[in-house]
Image 1 (cartoon, helix red, strand yellow):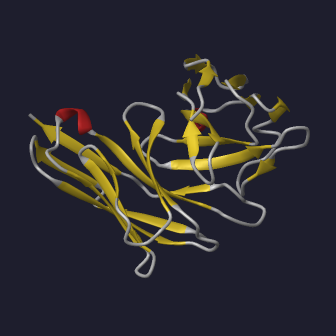
Image 2: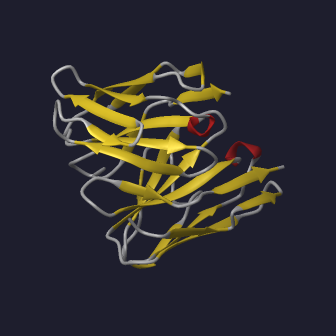
Length: 113
Length: 114
């Protein structure tokens, strides 16, 4: 497996502001993903973070709302833009290491007031 | 669209009981099924299953896959309070533009009382 860190661990933000979440891996990985888990719900994929090119977004998620960067094979950021209370969720990055297995970072718990 | 359904959605047992969690799936490009345990924020990996009928085991946890009937079960024997968590089943997309995407079930909330 890999050691994955995320910053911040949690945050409370005002509506209309933006928050950038960082994900750092201790080894180079090809596949990196961002998921959202809304309260009481399961995990939903936001996008696949592609190194050196634009992220691939799932239906219902757009780049203007969730811009993603992936400057190299160990690091990615997800920004939650122009936040509203509906964005209150846990945001998780994951990496693919072996076949289809994915390992998750510790998560960022976001509360938007 | 890929679909993963878990049952039961919640389960309350006492320490020492044995539990069986179920996961059924309907996916294209199936290659594997994953089980995770989620206690606070981050899901932790338990098992990856690729072949029918071959049990994966780790301590008191075990899991098996039936590719003909499209389901998997996760067994926990001699449960402990530390097993209290949400157990998630997920299937990776193994082809196309969504390669690697995990489709998750709703999860089973397991509560183990002393």
